[in-house]
Length: 566
Ligand SMILES: [Zn+2]
Ligand SMILES: [Zn+2]
Ligand SMILES: [Zn+2]
Ligand SMILES: [Zn+2]
Image (tube, rainbow, N blue to C red; front, side, top):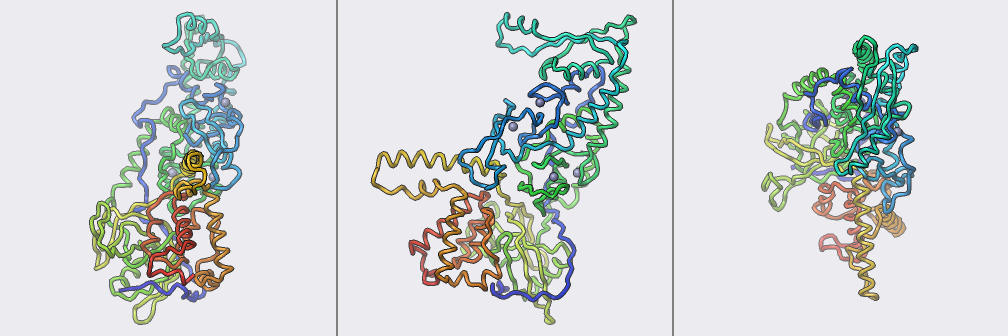
């Protein structure tokens, strides 16, 4: 059996070593989520669908052509100036950055959520597109008044409206004679603020020959398609965006491309800003407007792109691609040192080093407890993907391996390959920051209500532990943990010796990572620490380690892990 290398043993770096950049294993790649619109949609026609085409670049809030459009986390787009002023958000402390502690109420009634101000930035692709479209519209606006069309606005009526109200709406609806064909005249009407976003239009040509200027519309739409097409390429794969997904920094990629990038990085591939989104992009909305533009302007290209992507995905599906090392608990971002001597694992390590340098670390299932759908397997269901940082091969074939945790996973299926386990894994990711914020808000608010009620009924009693725990803000939980570390250091706790800190580093101030560090240095059983691999909430992880501190302070640690070591 192999064992975890002594934690205080650091491998000497073998001089200048260069490794190939890690490539995410195929099993970690996230399949494309179908776009919101049906790819079989027919292209919008210049003349017939002029009203619909112009609506694509109208702001649903102010009804003017979009200006500095911002795409919100709900996937909707409005002008930046149409966003309400940010306000401090109640009961949210994580992440502790000013732009996340402020939120704004989504102006769109179909959403109604409170979005973090940090996530409401100008959409780079749409800004450029809208400017190009405006420029083409201006170019095609005729200087002579020789192509008149009468436009009559039909305001949207609610079925519940009384007849009188409907008639009143007819009175306030706009009528205009404008020039240059339906597309240009409709756009002009929106520009002068006389066309509500939801309104329809009736067109009457005023041409003496009965010409309805269809050719003008067709020529303009061809030109619009041409200019738009150049902007609709993904900045990762350089082909037409497939299910465009916009990041908080305003950059847009195919959903699948962004997922692949996020699998091994947390920064935007264009502007390198930190993104904080789960690699699976779970619950991340697509850019609704870009999807509509793609499907409205070039549905044939969208369909061809989707078919090509699907063909690409076929091979390698459902294979057991991740080698599994059954040995010890490893944690994300933390180092794990291994001494490998069993022949089957020597083979596995050699293959890993020649391949993408990654493998999964899982713990033994000592109690043979059933592991979800897998049943009572030899190993536990959740593990950590490790990346080889340093590999030292001894002459007798044994090796010392220094690794770092990349991310957590759950095993979906497993088998054997040349004596070692292999699996199909799915990533375990934290909730999005928006969901984490909602969770904190909900938990602390309801704990406060319960605490008030309890204190009214039992003025002299101490609060029940669960209520007291939930009262803490996420930042507060981290601060308390940090304070505990400071106290333990002052008391010269041996598990915080300089040697251990030199291996695991100083405690991270990121609440998402602190629990992994704390679990790495704290001398408690691996089974206790294992629960950290299963939760996908930062706040939950902090509560777990906070409860460990409570037990250490209360000297209520189970036997075998006596507090005397502190
Ligand atoms: Zn919204
Ligand atoms: Zn607007
Ligand atoms: Zn792409
Ligand atoms: Zn960016």
